[in-house]
Image (cartoon, rainbow, N blue to C red; front, side, top):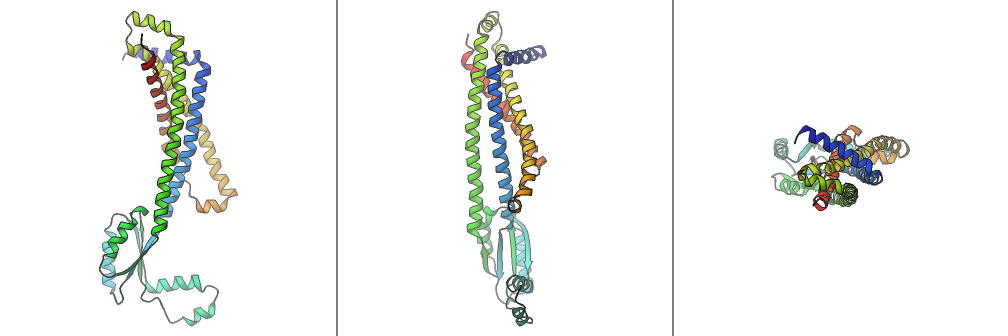
Length: 302
């Protein structure tokens, strides 16, 4: 396509937006609203997934050994576990360390009981490995593997919590996806309506252009450009608002709801918008492109 044709398409697309200001503004407003809601859902989804990811890493698997096992055998078991790709961290807890932790948590304010067990360690044979996986959904397969290792007496894991976190993550993704698809469908419909109005206004002009030999592509391109411009503007407006809101929301939650800030983990604003900006621009222009192409194919038949 020639540069002059591209410039013509852009100029005509801009003129079409001016001719149909009301419908163009309605379409821009709808896309902006849809992408604003999309951004809100993205914030919620991304931060919940981030929180779940962090919580998943805190759901460990405790591996206890057979009685009278040697330190060499324990080390060998540890090396076998490290070879598993899903293992994020492996921590060895000796019997003395396990007893010290238990004593502090249980007998913190009962000095008499602490003195009673001063030279005795009831957990001397309770050395273990604490294993954290990169994905909690992989825990059942990992537990099955570890239970089959020689020298392993018992494996303790929070399978219900692991399954709950995994299922919640999946449910949140499906729910957000369904709502976003519905919003995008509404935006495409309104873009289509705007383009249809532009075609109606220029119907006679288009007929003359076709009669003197203008190609379908030359006739259709201004309307496609119009849809993409509307989509681009509709995407830029909510991004500015979302950037301001996200920063203020995190600061507000941190100040007013300190309990929530200890439970929820928020992504850095730059990390969030590194994905959200190109995604929103692509969706906005994509909505404009799809809506305009559907409309021109349907109505531009001279």
